[in-house]
Amino acid sequence: MNLPNFLAILRILLAPLMFWFLVDRQNPIFGGWHESWLDYFAALIFVLASITDFFDGYIARSWNQITKLGSILDPLADKMLMLAGFIGLVYIDRASPWAVFIILTREFFITGLRVAMASEGRSVSASWAGKAKTVAQMFAIGFLLMNWPYANEILWFSVFLTIYSGYEYIRSYFWES
View 1 (cartoon, rainbow, N blue to C red):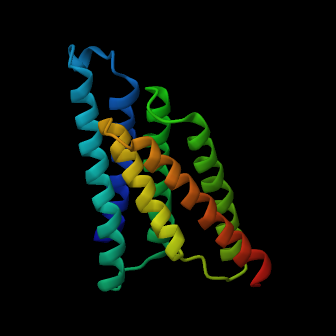
View 2: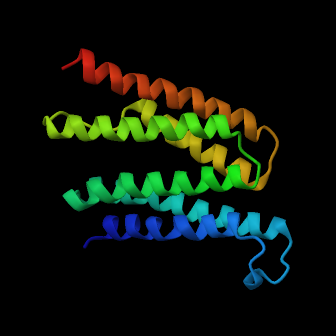
View 3: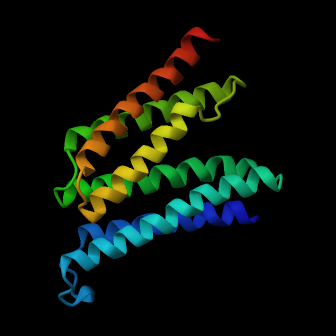
């Protein structure tokens, strides 16, 4: 166990906590909290989890702590965080179900494609478009959690980047073998 793997596990644990703040708003534990406070706590958890995403990759690369476990945990933690955010936001009617469907379909399809590429010994590292897609999705979730202006526009921009980065993986798999 190293620090990057610990941070990925922390992100895995934070994802359902954020989801809980989004979908279980009537829970007696919240004791009549105003909905905006639940949004703030969900957003705080999301920001903390997103920060761990940056640092686990940065530390793993710069301290030469890249492990097989980390290469599994990191994308799993990323997917769990995005899944919790997007499904929770659809549940509270802040995100377009179509946008979320497109994003999640691409995520599952490309994850399967990356597994196929890895089994063939091919590189599965994230492309520039894949990293931009992740940042756009994080901004979209953050803006939607806070119910800020232009949140839906950012969501649809992230859908565009999601489709484009998915196209890059498909192109790479089928035409650059």
